[in-house]
Amino acid sequence: MLPANPAFDLTGRLALVTGSGRGIGHAIARGYALAGARVLLNGRDADRLEAAATALRAELQGAQVRAVPFDVTDAVAVEEACEAIVADHGCPDILVNNAGIQIRGPLTELPIDDWRQVVDTNLTSGFVVGRTFARHMLRRGSGKIVNVCSVMNHLVRASVAPYAAAKSGLGGLTRVMCAEWAPHGIQVNGLAPGYIETDLNAALVADPDFTRWITGRTPAGRWGRVEDLVGPAVWLASSAADFVNGQVIYVDGGMTAVI
Ligand SMILES: NC(=O)c1ccc[n+]([C@@H]2O[C@H](COP(=O)([O-])OP(=O)(O)OC[C@H]3O[C@@H](n4cnc5c(N)ncnc54)[C@H](OP(=O)(O)O)[C@@H]3O)[C@@H](O)[C@H]2O)c1
Image 1 (cartoon, protein in one colour):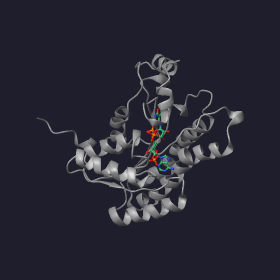
Image 2: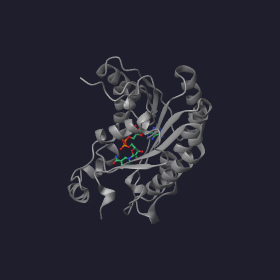
Image 3: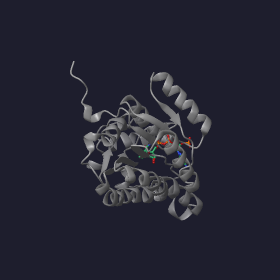
Image 4: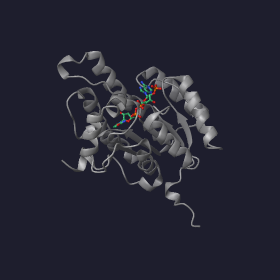
């Protein structure tokens, strides 16, 4: 049998995936562990995270998975976590800014605290976590950063103002990170999922009218699954994507390609 293509191998790399106790982040973290990476799971709930790390170690015998709980909206906690991670494990080779939330509501009624919470979690966290870890990557001269964006970088619908603004901003931030850090050996790209079945969309998945609309609107004819993001996330984190920089890659079953 031919060996697997080494360009996609992540053996020995250290990957930190924010918001990876469940959902898309967890699937990406699991995919990185399967590709050989040492993985750091992040989220706010230390117990849930520890349980997720234990389960992943049990499932993937030999996988090196650790829990590093911190809140990505707390700049002081991010600094402290970064120092502890670098001291305990070394500087991550791969950072995925995945943590995100959604709060839907009409623009005129949306409480400003909801706006701030969505923008802090989906956009400002990318700035804070990204630059905190990038300082170490810059000193080393290598690193891969994947910012989890959305089809809402490109397409919107009513009721998603803070989310669409934050994810569009994250696309812009991705390009600036590329402009500043690419000369120092760092690749920064966006990964933009379409509509994926996770807790974030539980209310929409449960709504048959919305599901009919989504499956009709998506050329692939179905909701996305968390596994759909894994291959592209491994590719962007691997040396196979060393000359891919500043791009937002849509993984949406074709949704953004059609009207
Ligand atoms: N599902 C979709 O259709 C879809 C589409 C496009 C983009 N996305 C993006 O994909 C990413 C993952 O979404 P998902 O669908 O997997 O959502 P999810 O199942 O709700 O998971 C969200 C994750 O983010 C973590 N998180 C939230 N706030 C956090 C904070 N302040 N600090 C640290 N972790 C935090 C959560 O952990 P705890 O709650 O345990 O802290 C959880 O692990 C998000 O950025 C989302 O915007 C999702």
